[in-house]
Image 1 (spheres, one colour):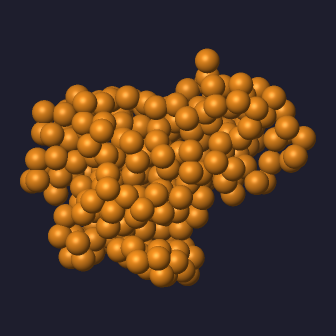
Image 2: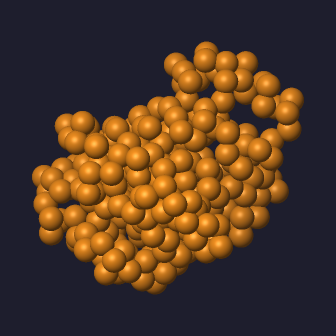
Length: 246
């Protein structure tokens, strides 16, 4: 198994890409800490994994709050004794055109999608440094690379993740820690489910593979970057977008 006995923390793990990753990692032998704000759904997801014989536990966290993150990390260490992998997957949208985007909506997205990544990574770092190895994978987006109408806040956060990933890769590589990012394209998640069908069809027409991504497509990219197979991959942003960025 590619992640046998590894301990993986996945934020935003109760639904969508996060839960797809939790399942995929479990299949590959990882002990998975599902970290999410939604305790009800999170506990349900853990129950589903345990029914299949996997080692998983739920940890409630608000990634916009540093104290909540520190508490979550301490609980994971208390439960599993180490953290080998961090998947910074949690994210929200509060879309709006620039002229009408409120400061509150801008800040909420920055707090969760960007500051949360900084705090989660900083919180697990001492444990990875102590063990002399680790894999940190953060979720960017094609929106952060080429922009998207109505997503000033989201695109800003996802673009910043690219910069942080490359900076951390330079800082932490010498400590045995690989830092990479995944940039999903349009993917079948709750976020995209809110988009009108006409717009979905337009999206598909722009993608060379002529389909939206599935959560499992992104989870498989996370798996590669979390596994030993990617030990010489550092500071990379892996596009999983069906070719839309060519």
